[in-house]
Image 1 (cartoon, rainbow, N blue to C red):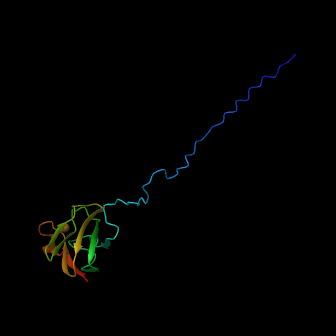
Image 2: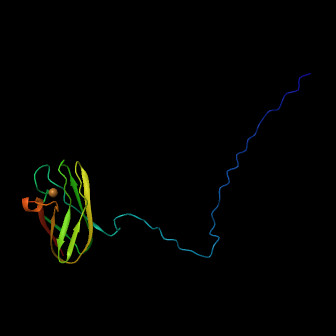
Image 3: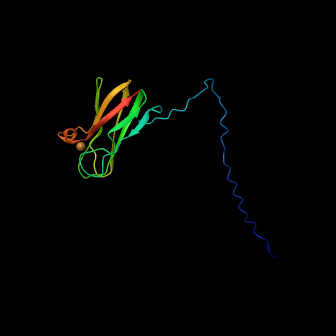
Length: 133
Ligand SMILES: [Cu+2]
C-alpha cells in the first residue's frame, strides 16, 4: 500500500510590502539635490586648446548670478581655469590629460578675465574676456 508522500513545500514568501503611510504629522519633505554645483548655476564651457597656451575661445558671456566655468584640458601640460575682475579672484584646480577644471563664482554684471593661473600662461595667451550682463 503506497502512501504518497505529500512533500509540497509551499514556501509562501510573504513579502511584506510596507505601505508607507505618512504616520507622522510632519509633511512636505523637499527633495534636496545635493550636488557640488548649485542647481541654478550657469555652466560656461571654456576648454583648453588642443595645444599651445590658449583656450578654445577668447570671449564668453553669462548672465549675472552663479556661474560655473568649466574647462577640459586635453594637454599633458597642466592648466586651470581661473577668473578675476570686479573683486573676484578664483582659481580652479590644475588638471591635465583630459581632466576638467571648474570654478564656481557669483558674478555681477561687468567684464571679467578668465585665464590660466599657472605662472606665465596668461601672459602667453591663456586668457579671454567673460562679459556678464
Ligand atoms: Cu595654463
